[in-house]
Length: 299
Image (cartoon, rainbow, N blue to C red; front, side, top):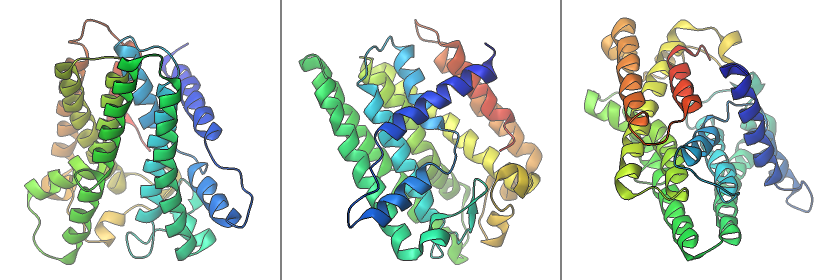
């Protein structure tokens, strides 16, 4: 199989794992469960769980204890999108070509759906303890849950979202603040994916730190590419409204440095990440190709 076919197989596998952990739509809370499932299953690249599993394989990981974490991270990613789309945040009506959760279920239910996904994520990750075969694996799972909580929380994604909202007030935003937003709002969950994969496979501290650095580069490059597409793509290709950054008066790497320099920075960051991934004893050519694909993606 070529890269695109292999990616399709791995993406489908990640989606099947995710579906296995989604709630049944029944009971008096049925509506919020429907909203949760709607938001998660409305499409998506499943990039983070794929990166997590490939990082796990890079360090020789075996077994199914990675699977609850793959599902949990995708739940957290999707909860953040549900909240991002709300009128109080980005006020977007479409995502991935579908109506956003709040447009279908209303503001209140969308907030609860996001909250539900966040809580379910940690319930799901904790199921990995049942799959541990020994004390060392139990310690690895505990460390992975700590990474998940920190990278998704106030010192990670939520911290980045906070700075992002404050950047919309009209006050001058510096490049340092912009990189803080990108590092935490976007890169943090990619760091969680790659660090957790390494930790659960038994990678040592230095290797986990290198994965954190590689994931930082990938996350920043991914966000800059997202900013580029917001200017250059179309709503039909992207599956969501374009020009949102300009509409919301957001400072981006593109508005700060222009399209040409932004494109070169995506290339530089990606190549540095590849150098790190190629430095380990084991190799994962698919993971390397996945990073390369982020440079040229069009949606």
